[in-house]
Image (cartoon, rainbow, N blue to C red):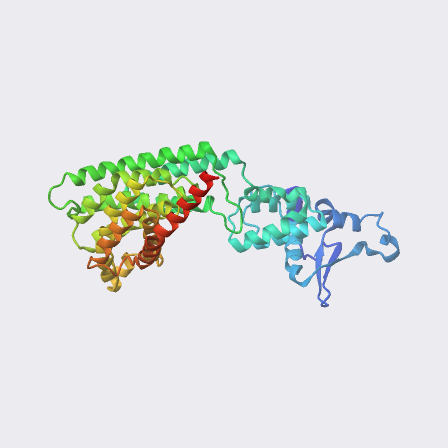
Length: 437
């Protein structure tokens, strides 16, 4: 139908109409639309069949002058809109015909049901290009798969992505998330970090990405570059003989690196490559604590100290529960460096959070202190008994005895020490009897 013919036929024009379309519902609604058979037949298979000479009841009932279309009440308006669209030239030059995704989806269902290929194509093109709200997307997922191959292009953006594409975007994202972009891009960087965590997290669905050796290698490379920048910052701060964290630029840069290190803990833990962080943190611990101890008690510095303790908590957890195995001397060393710092810093953080304004700044994981205390106990109990005695002696004589509470470690040490000779003597006796036999 060309444009000239369309302009001569107007829906509802009784003077030129030669067929009535009766839209009827089970609820008793019965609306008449005065139409033109030349348009209905050309653009809709249902009407072409009904108005055909071959239709069984055509001659008996003289039904060519009136065609009934039955529909649900919820779909009534979509049927009306579809019939109106049969009178519109749909050639891709008009885009504002659909009045939203839901309306286009409803019209698409009717177009498939009645067999209107031109409108089906136009609906699909619109839906495929339009933005969807979440509720609309759920509706599309319910409806479109039932409409057959002609509606499949609508689902293209929802199809599973091949593994190669997932790996490529993950690699690009991890490189950006561990970089140091300008401050103006901090929101974008934070968003990228959140999505990276989501990609590898198992929730109701399996992780989007299963890390292989190549992916782990790429993550390690990114982490090592991050550690290198963080280490350079430590060197600069360590060379400042006054108060390194008093300068605003120093605070911002150091906090930025520390925040990235804190975040990367989540990624390394999920990918089971925490050793990279643990080994670096052990090597850098003395420099980190030295810089932090020189800081003032401003809220900015207290926040930096908190972030450092959060990272240390992840490191200590990995060591304490055997995720990463360190030699005894290294475990004892990291305890001696961080235990005094944590016990002195916790009261400062607790005091700062009493202030409502500071509480908004200091976002503290509610389980941080409990987790840290449990890790301290686990590591102490895995030390040789003599080293345990040294740590517990220092704890019992310290003014900060309340935290961390090492009572559990003390109780286990007392029990082990008391029964040690008896246990060892039994073992020696059994050994002697075995040799004599």
